[in-house]
Length: 84
Image (cartoon, rainbow, N blue to C red):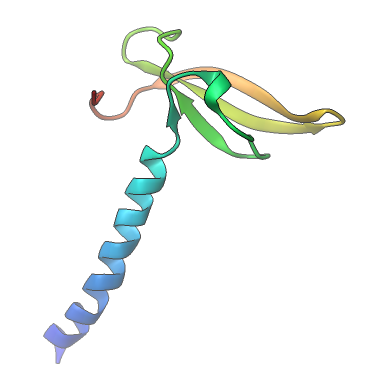
């Protein structure tokens, strides 16, 4: 009975983890100009080499203005290894 319940939960949990991993990988761009439309509150990583070693640039849609979403940039620690 318990084994059947675990099997029923394993598939949705695995699917959710794969979607999270895919979404995180899709949010890294090589240049800031490549970001299509940044939404309010959205965080995007930009790996353009402008931050010190071990850090990556985070672009945040921080404020709504008359001309669109204001972008805020800062360097944050890079999590994980860089993949090429």
